Length: 180
Length: 254
Image (cartoon, rainbow over the protein chains, first blue to last red):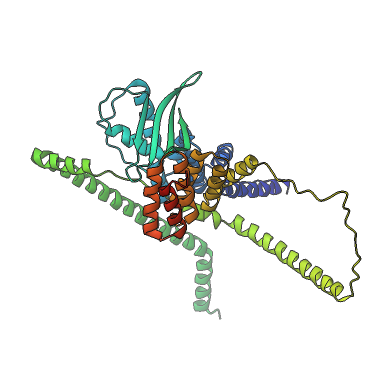
C-alpha cells in the first residue's frame, strides 16, 4: 500500500513539473525552465513533449550545449524529428562559428540550412563574407530591417574565450547572447 | 436384453468428451501457428520491398553516375541557390496543456471557485441585509495637526519597474511612458530610443512620434526631426505634429 502511494505521489509530482516548466516558459523565464528540465531530465527523457519544452527553454536561455541530449532523444514523432533537425542545425552552427572565430577557420564553402534563430542569422552573414581577414568585431545589418544590427565578437574571459552576439535596434542594445 | 447400439453411442460420446480439451488445444495451436506464419510472411514481403527499393535507388545512383556532367552541375547550381529554412514545431505545448494532470488541476480549481463563489454570495446577501438597516453617520473631526502625506516614489524606481514590465510584455504604452519619462529627465538619447521602439511596435501612436521628433531636436538632429514630422503629418494629418513642425521650423522649439 505504501509503495502504491509513493508511486502515485511520484507520478503526480512529475506531471506537475511539465506544467510548471510550461508556465515558466510562457512567462519568458527560460533559464529557470531550462534548469528545472535539466534537474528532471532523467525521469522524463522518454516524454517527447517534456524534452521539446526543455530544449526550447535552453535554446532561449542560450544554453545551446544542453541541446545535444534532446537532439538525440527527439525521434518518435514527426514534430519531434522536425525540432531535432532545427536544434541540431543551431548547435552545429554555433560550434562552427566559434571554431571559425577563434581558429580562423574558413566556412565559405559550407552550405547549411538556416533557421529564424539569431545565431543562424549571424552564421549566414559570416559565411557570406567568404575568405576574409579576421576582424575583432563584426557588424551585420538585418536584410529585412536595416536598423536591426548584430555585433559579433570574441570576449576573452579568465579561462576561456566566449563568443558574443549583441542585437541592436538602431543604437539601442536589445539583447546579448554569450556562447562558448 | 442389452441395447448395444445405445451403449456404443454413449461410449463414443464419452470418448469425445475425454479428447475434447486436447482437440481444442490442438486447433488453437494450429490457429496461432497460422497467424505467426502470416505475420512473418508479411514482414518478409516488406523487407523484400525495402530490398527492391534499395535496388532501385542503387540503379538510380548508377544512372546518375552515368549521366553527363553538365546536368549534375546544373542540379548543383539550383541546389546552391535555394537555402532550406528550418522552423520549429511548438505543437507539443498544446499537448502539455491538454494533459490529464492539467484537466484534473482545473477541475479542482473549478470546485474551489464554486465554493468561493457560493461563500461570496452568502456574504453579499448578509451585507445586503445589513445595508437595509438604518446607518448612523458620526461626524469625525479631521486631525489637522497631522495632515495626510502622500509620498511619491523616486522616478528612477518607477522607471526601473516599468522597464522590467516592458521587457516582459513589450507593451507600446509602457515604452511610450518610458520615452516620456526619459524626456522629462532630459535623457534625450534614451527617450529617442524608446520612442523609436514604440513606433516600431505600433506606428499609429501620435504621442510617440512627437516625443521622437522632440528628442531628435534636442539631440541636435533638427533636419531628421523635420523630415520625420513631415512624413508623419502626410500620413496621419495630425494637428499636433503640424504645430510642432511649425515650431521647429520657426526655431521656437529648440
